Length: 219
Image (cartoon, rainbow, N blue to C red; front, side, top):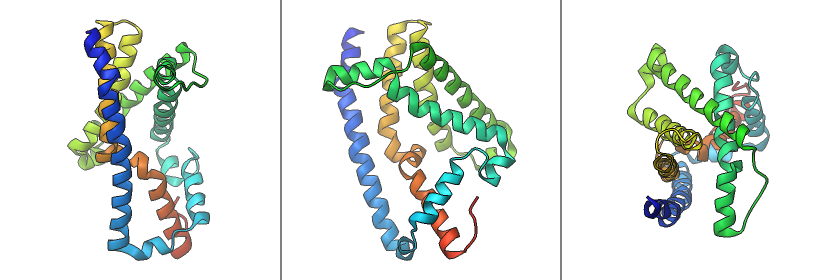
């Protein structure tokens, strides 16, 4: 198990980060080239003013009609994304690894806070899973790719919680947590998770079109 742990935090981690970085660069460049080829005119009406206006409204949990019409889903969505960003960045164990390999460190979350946020994140994933399964309009639009995109971060956090609380074999849970995290990194450029790369651009594009061309709101 120690050999496997050394492998997943060593060579496999380098591979995962390499695929994530270069895959993301490739994805962004190829999508830009595709946009120029298929819809070059759209790039000309991209507006910082209208794009930022749209982004800021959609970052407000009550700033859009869409969020207002589904307040519980809006709340869960915001909590989900906050936990997804904050916990991996500021978890003590992660920062220790950055310090160990690169000599870089920054403030960390208290373990109890990170643990609570991780459990809340798993609960949010369960909510999204039930919503996709039980809500007819969402179920109709759901594909296998959506389930995979939900399962990968769910399992990453779940195995992390199990490892922290030493439920089951803690070493096995820790290795599974790291493996799922690396799978998530690798899959970001090539799965539904790529919206983390394009989410703000897509929102800016829609805001520019609605504000600068249609002269109306997109929220």
